[in-house]
Image 1 (tube, rainbow, N blue to C red):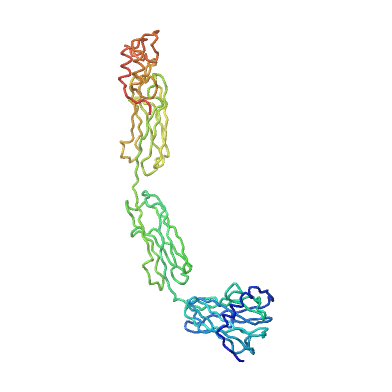
Image 2: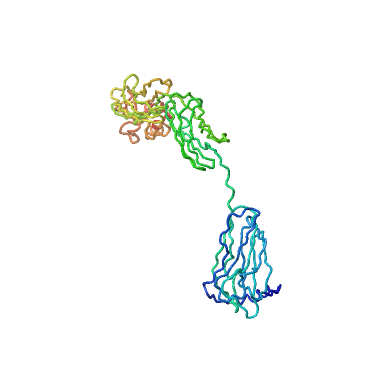
Length: 465
C-alpha cells in the first residue's frame, strides 16, 4: 500500500471544518472503542499497546482522535497506523504525525483518504503504546464532545455519528507488610471534679492502626497504681475503633489530683508501644457541709402593732453534698416566731421559706428579727447560718414618718410637715397626714415640733428594699 505524507493535512481539515459544522448525523450503530477495554497488572517500567478501533462504519473518508490519559501514571511513547487489520488497509492514505503531550496527558492522531475513495466496515484506526511510570489507575478516554477533537467523516465530509467506548488502566500495588499496632486515641471523664465518694464515667477510644484484624487484647484503666477495671476488646478490624466506658467510684481516691491511665496491652508482633497508653487528670474534692441564710426580708418594715407581716427567708446549700434535714428558726429577740424543717436540699440549691408574724405582742419601735439555720453534721462554717433584720413596730394609732410613702424619709416628708406647721385640727392648712406625733408619741391634733422631730430623726432612712 502506497503512503504519501502530506504536511498540509491539518490545513485541509481546518478549511473543511465549516462543512463539518453543517453535518447530518447518520448511522447510530458505529462504535469507536479502546481495545482491550481493561489493562491490568502492568508493572512500573513495562509497556503495553491498545488499539483504537471503529466498528460498523458505513463510509469512512477521514478520522481523527484525541485520547486522554493520566500523565502521572502513564507515558505515551508511540502512536502508529496498523500494519494489518486497519480500516484503511488497502487504501492510499494521507497520514499525519501524532501529537503526544506527556505533560497534559493526551495524544492526537488522524488519517484521511483522498478523492472519492471511502472505506466501510470495521477495523483498527491506530495503535498507541504506553510506558507505565507509576502505580494507580488511569482512564484511556476519548475527548468529548464527539465531533470536536474526535470524529469520523464521510466522503461528503459530513460527520458519521459514533458512540465512544473508553478504556481503563490499573496496576495493583504491592500489598503492605502485615503490621500490628493498637493505639489509645481518646480519654474523657463525665466529671473532672467529683466529690469524694461520687462515681464518674471514664470513656476511652481504642484504634487499630495495623493492617489486620486483632482478635483480642485488653484495655485497663488505673488510678496511679490502683487498677479500676480491665475490659477485653475482640475482633477489632484494621482502621476500626471501639469506645469503652468504665465506672469509677472515688470513695477510696485521695483528695486532689488523681492521674488516670488507660493502657492497651501490646499484642504479638507490635513494635510501636508509644501510643498504647493515655493519661488524664481528675481532681477529687472533699465532702463539705455548709448551710447559709442568704436572704431575709419583710412584707412591711413598719407594721402597726397588731398587724401580721410575712417574713421571707432564703436558705442556700453551700456544701458539696445534699442535706437531708435541718431546721430554720425565726425569732424576735428571744421570742420564737416559728420553725420550719428543710429536707433534701441539693448542693448549690436554694429554698425559700415564709413565716407569718403577728406583731400584737411585739414592743413598739425597732425589733431585731433573726433567722437561724441549725448546723448540719460536721458543718464548721457557722458564720453564715444566721441573718438579722429590723422591723419598726408602730402604735396602732401612730402614723409613719414616711408621709408620701415613697420608701424613704427625706426632705419631701419634712416639707409636708413644715407646710402645715403651727396649725391645729380645723385650720385651713392643717393636714391629717402631717399630724404624726405628739407628747405621748401619738397624733394630738396639732402640727408642731413633735411632728417635725418624728420625721427628722429618721432622716434618709430607706424603708423599702
